[in-house]
Amino acid sequence: MRILVADDNKDAAQTIGALLAMRGFQPLLVNDGLEAFARLQRPDAPPLATLDWKMPGMNGIEICRQLRQQATQPYPYLILVTGEGTKDDLLDGLASGADDYLLKPVDPNELYARLITGKRILDLQEQLLATQRLLRQQATRDSLTGLLNRATILEASEREMTRSRREARPVTIIMADIDHFKSINDTHGHIVGDRVLHDTAQHLLTLLRPYDTVGRYGGEEFLIVLTGCGASKSLVLADRLRRMVADNPVMCNGKAISVTLSLGVAVWDGHSSLQELVEMADAAMYRAKRRPQSRGDGGNRRGPATGATVGLMRLPIKLQLSNRPAIHPRCASA
Ligand SMILES: [Mg+2]
Image (tube, rainbow, N blue to C red):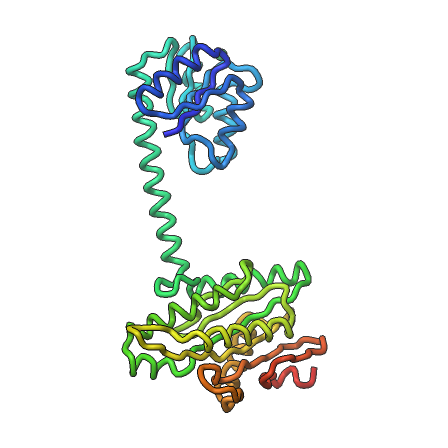
């Protein structure tokens, strides 16, 4: 474990450093309070520090107080080291946020015992944080595909709509649905069905930009949120997603299983509710699904076309897809 040793007396710092190294710790020595404070705020800060009470720049108590005020995460374990001091001084030290204290000259066994206490607390903290991360992951992710779950992708959509209003940038959602998924399950079994869902999710992630968001909306339905992307760009992307999935059959037990997606696109008009926006994308997706297969080049590329729906957009919309996208009736007159 790395330990920051802060003491303006270089000999004192080196003595503590040598004791730590003998016990297998990795000491990092500094001789100035401000430098100690800076080090403890860095993302790669040592998890534990011994801080001399009196140092130039910033004393040990002030470092403790400031770090606790900032609620630095993860919580650093702080041990104050002092040469003198009354009981009241020590109480002040603990009140400033120190976890423990040591008197100079430092007794090696006492130092070691206090470090072990600190390490035990830090290990417990790490376990708690790991559990917290796992719970957060379970609460926000779909376990099969690793994508955001329904509640979280809807929250993300709401957030993007709020940001879109503030920054005057378009926000688009795409609803993507795997065609004939029930028959994939019925024909090949649920394990293959799960594989199809998983691989389709991976294809979507491959093509999306890092700042786009995608989640599993329902059984075989995916919801994608695009930011800063108007109608025509979104339609082009939707069609790329469709082709990506159609061109890459899912391989399972040596068999290639063709998968196609139908997609519906809805650009937010700045007024509709999230539910209305989702309904528009959904309606466009179902219209795309009902459309006869429109591509004539055979093989895996045959599949339902990409649908598109646009809410109350006032912009003229140019559609540049090889297949004819479905336009939501509400925008036919827009
Ligand atoms: Mg000092």
